[in-house]
Amino acid sequence: MSMDMSMDNDEQQILALHEAGDRALMSADFALLAQIFADDYVQYNESGKAFTKQDVLESFRSGANSATPRSCTVLNPTKWNPRERD
Image (cartoon, rainbow, N blue to C red):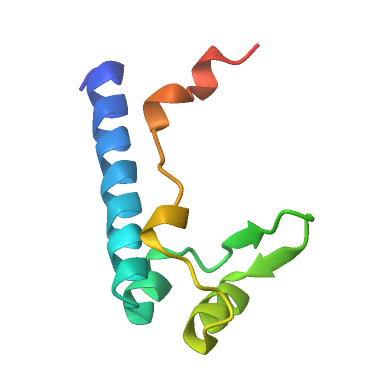
């Protein structure tokens, strides 16, 4: 398999996971989010405070984090390529 085909497949997998995560957020499917987020997942807020996977999932369950489809970030892996870094 060529590197281009591998990158295309990797990008497709990343996009599929991101889209599944968005659907899980929109439908409040916390069990699916728990499967999608890696055990070592860390999310940072705008002031730099770190939140673990469990912190994030609990904030969704409790309603403290009210993410909506409008607040979800769109991921485009084609705009970032680690092989093109300086």
